[in-house]
Length: 116
Image (cartoon, rainbow, N blue to C red; front, side, top):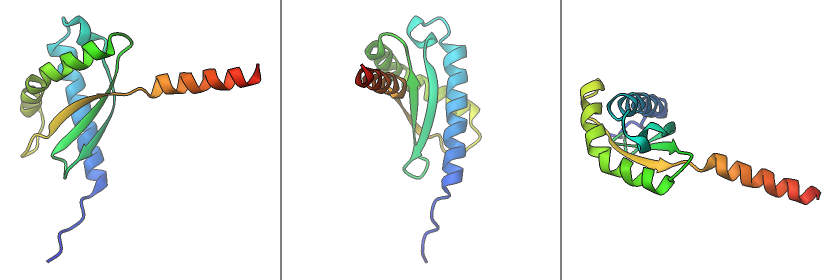
């Protein structure tokens, strides 16, 4: 018997739900952490049959320090996520910096320089 293909819409819904819940956890449980308080979760992708969710974040300053701090608290965040999510399994999570805004600004800068 062939295995049914994973419903990507379901994966997207779970990734979005994880993003929302993790944002709430960061905002509530880590509000006094100066590195974490400036973090915005800007997207999420589900991988590996929804066993893994990659959370994209944006931070204005100290990206390396923020990434290190997020890596340090990932287990605590996942533990809190397990309390809030209504699924049988809690996906592994990983925080990844989203540099889309910086790349867009760089492209705009390059385009402006072409006109000069």
